[in-house]
Structure formats: structure tokens, C-alpha cells
Image (tube, rainbow, N blue to C red; front, top):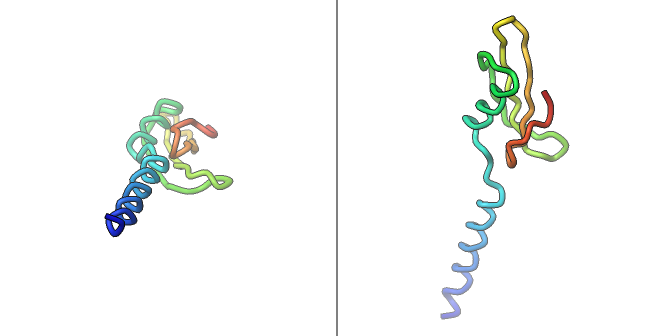
Length: 81
């Protein structure tokens, strides 16, 4: 019984940490960014901002303006427009 307890606890802790650190995903980051500044997506990069995992989504508006939208990769909130 004891020899199964450690692997079980290890598996359980790995599963819980995966849920805590799951991110919104690139497609959802693009959708959020286009809601802020509609247009063609030029690039998407995963990065960190002050220790927070973020997506930097660069869009090109129909008027020719380039915008970089920074999105929190864990919560999906817009950090900067």
C-alpha cells in the first residue's frame, strides 16, 4: 500500500498544478485582441511581463494602424492596448 502512495500523490500534485497554470490559449488571446482592436493579426508571441505570462498580439487595422495588445495568459484580461 505504501509503495503506491507516493506515485499517487505525485500524480495528483502534477494534475492540480496543471489546472492552476493553464492558460487561455493562443486562439482565445487572438479573439480577445480582435475585440479590442479589430483587424488582421500580424503576430502572436507568448512572453512574460513583470513575471506574469502574457500574449502579445499585434494587429493591423483597416485604417493601417498597428496595435500591440498585451493579454494576461492565465486570466484573459487585457493588460495594455
